[in-house]
Length: 275
Image 1 (cartoon, one colour):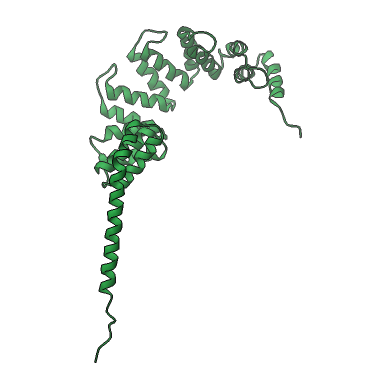
Image 2 (tube, one colour):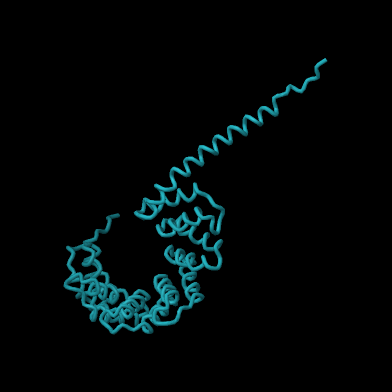
């Protein structure tokens, strides 16, 4: 069976796209954007996305992203907002999230914290973990509203339960005030997932004995993990803690050797009766 090439796939979708197939128009735009089946051509990509955008949510989102990021000319937030709005209208959670960001920072629209929060809430209902995390940040910091720690926890937990490492770390940080053991557990989960901030914070908890037993060896291990990821404070902690842990390990070995000698001495009698 002959293998289909990118060029063959492009020709297949191009014929359908020219006949008005919306999904095919999106596919052709995507292939021009990625340079698959044809030389990369963002202008061609834009034309096909524009044809599909009225009915195709991902085409509208991708087109908005091109203008938002300024991949052809300087970023054009007004056009980006137009197509993110179209994507959101077609129930695209990414489009809703981006509208939340644009209203949060006043990009192409007037800064409006209430509208920003509303778009994040709509995106969160569709499963956007980034929107959940941002809602947690909004309620934790009181951006455009009063500080509501329980609401922050709710949204962080929603995202954390979906596996978002940043949300796990944020949730742990908030929980430190009320439940240090649970905070430790979330830091540990995020740290095992490779999240640098969680690795550093977990190391601090091990070093201080907060939410877990004090364990300098574990603290050093997690400081090293964070340091490898580029955390400057972690690198300083490794330099500070390494000689302490090394001395501790030597002392533990000496103590273990002494305990072994004492145990052998206690068992040294032959147990026979001398007549």
